[in-house]
Image 1 (cartoon, one colour):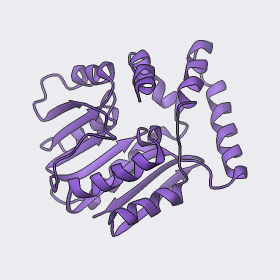
Image 2 (tube, rainbow, N blue to C red):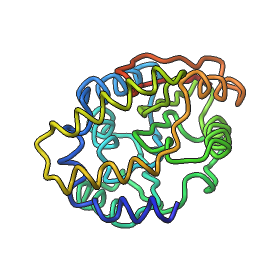
Image 3 (spheres, one colour):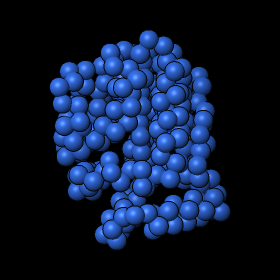
Image 4 (cartoon, one colour):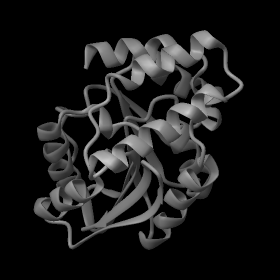
Length: 224
């Protein structure tokens, strides 16, 4: 996790500008995550796991201006960018911590969201995090994860990898930024979509479904 934190500290200044260039389905990816939040009622408390610069939280803060939003991330530099983004907004709270091990308040959140973060964890920590998210949510609360997954077969994984790599190579980025992106991806520990949905059901979620997929970019959600 230290290597990952250092990697994101190094890119914090460019992170938001690069997101639309590195995510070929950017609008759908975040837009569908936001739309799925309609399934949560009377949203007062939101937890953003692996919040980084607050990119995902910004969408939810605009939709739910009266909600309290807690951003948790292990990168100090990324959270500092989030603090700049939300300067003057007393509804936004920050927690610098390893979200794979930190404890969340039970039965507190109406929404738990995450964007491109959980795939950095080892699989046993993903399962543990899903369990903690279950207990952190209120009854009928929703967990929404916009993330990247591993192909269920070698064939699928090859296509996912080649499709995204070619997208990055053709993106209007410097050669240095492209190579740094590939280095960060080498730290990823992706899990297949079906496996993660099974983990969510095993954690106690009544519903766990995928609602969007563009190659290895997916948006899935689970209801307590």
